[in-house]
Length: 85
Image (cartoon, rainbow, N blue to C red; front, side, top):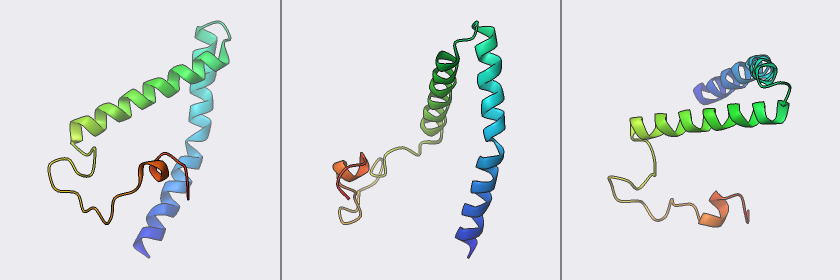
């Protein structure tokens, strides 16, 4: 029950942040003379770098780092990359 409530809350917050993303794309595209795809890509790259830095700072990267991996719970590479279901 707790998990479903958390997932629902995350969905609502994510949906509420879509206008913020659109506004930041529009503001950045005005600054760079109307190149909307470049503005969206720039914001995506900045968000990806911020996420990577946060993961690195928190030490929450690869599941097997710092301890032995449970081989029964590991996901095959193809499945982790979105292939073979």
